[in-house]
Each structure stands twice: as C-alpha cells, then as structure tokens.
Image 1 (cartoon, helix red, strand yellow):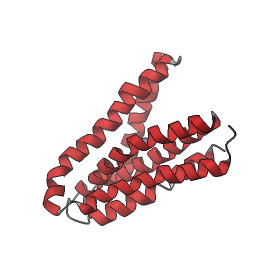
Image 2 (cartoon, rainbow, N blue to C red):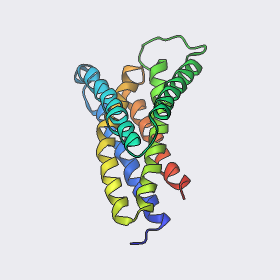
Image 3 (tube, rainbow, N blue to C red):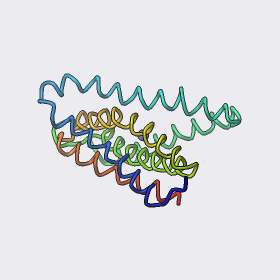
Image 4 (cartoon, rainbow, N blue to C red):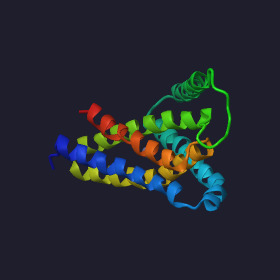
Length: 185
Ligand SMILES: [Zn+2]
C-alpha cells in the first residue's frame, strides 16, 4: 500500500494529540495530584529507563551494533544530559515554589521535545515500510505516549510549573512529532 506525506502528517497529528492526556494534571484536584505526583514521576522514569535499557539497547545489540559502540553511545547520552542540565542550571537558583520552575522541570521540557521529535522519526520509518506498518507503529507509539505524557506533565508540576502551564507546555512540545516525521521525508 502506497502512503503519502499527507497520511504521515495526519498520523503524526494523531500521535501528537496523545499529549492531551497530560490534561490529567489539571483535572486532578490539588490534594489528589500532590499524592499522585511521586507515583506519576516514578512512572515517567520507569517507562523511559525501561524503554532504553530493556528495549532499545538490547535491540541495537541484536541487530549487530558492537557492544563497545553501544556503551559509547550510552556514555555520550549521559554526558549530553549533564551538558544540558549544566546549561539550564547556569544563573538559576533552584526554588520549588508554584510557578517557579526548577532545573529538572526545564530539562524535562527539552527531553520531551526531543522525545517527540524521535517519535516522529520512528513513525515516519514505519510509514516508509508501508501503510500497515505505519499504522501499527502509530498504535504502538501512541500507547506508550499516553502514560509517558501524564508522567512527564507531573514532573513539570513537581518542578514548579502550575498544572495549567504544565498541560499547555506538554501540548506545545508535541509539535516536534510532525516536525520529526516530516524531517524524514
Ligand atoms: Zn514516545
């Protein structure tokens, strides 16, 4: 089945729309949200660590990436994150008050944007393999995005963003999905 750029673009909009699930941080009443925050943050960390260490890395090794190369990329990834954090931390005093975001929350935004961009690339790769593969990729990525979005927005709230701002920013970062998808065209 032939697929067009329009199909891919529409699929990327559907995938980006999963960030609407981050609205949960606005809907949950204050006390319930405060109680849920540690769990939701754990969910965000668990999902990403699990995906990287139990899925992506073993898959890369299976498909022939040399072990020393894979570990080199892991090391480079850690260093890149330290560099981003150092940049965001410069001149910023960490104060956890409502509306005063701390460094980890801003780092989460950068990470969210990059994550969406890569999801867009993954989606485009699925559509390059064919329409059915593209739709299967859309479904698989969308399913991991819903809990990840909720977890990510909760990290923003825990880092000082007001729930409404956390939702708006989460939604805004989703523009990276069509951007990533179309970058592959
Ligand atoms: Zn994702």
